[in-house]
Image 1 (cartoon, rainbow, N blue to C red):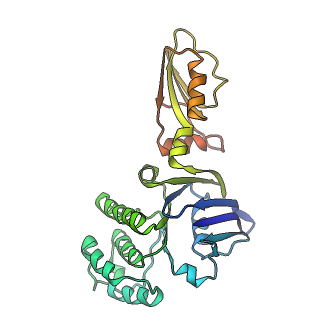
Image 2: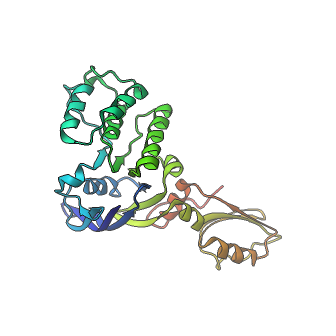
Image 3: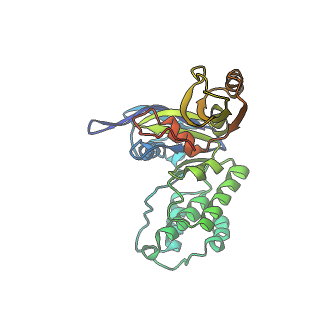
Length: 297
């Protein structure tokens, strides 16, 4: 659905993106994560056709995005910093959106009005940050987009509003095969909603996998030994912690093979503990100029 191939972008000699390639399947929710300054927003602005790449291509269903109005009409974008015409109210913005996006669905707009309970006649400059996010989602979802690109979409929303928004997004993914690409620092939230995850670091993709596959290839082993623990060089150990006769290891590898290697060490006990997306993010970046403590309890 969305194909980014060899994307490069430099600002004043600074490489913001370096040979970025990602693939977002149709009808999926794809989460992009990374530390501040890793290039997430720059990537997103290329995907929606705001920035011109120095090198590489961005295609949606085999069509270039930049300078392509036909594709852009099918793509909706909610940035981190919401902007509306300050003198306008919601009715004014609906009129504007209907002129720009021919697929804008008034029936859906009417259905969304009671969900968020916003005042149509109130000037948008008087809306709080959270209310502006509500308005952005109402307008965007009424566009009936094929692709929805979200940059820190839930910032400023309370837990009830977050649940409402994700419920609406899930509905569109299930019923209309909408493709959602989302950037967020809330890894716990992404873990609950994403099918695929990519990790950006210093403008490069260091990891891209399905979430289930990712969680099956990096996990925590807890083992107990009688006396001194053996050598773990047969395992790809990312971090370890030892308390008495109990050892906890964060390891990378194919699960069945790792378990066979661990069992060959003849532990008194052997348990596999899942890692959260946040923990995976930390340990994947642990060798990339990050000071990560090896303590994992």
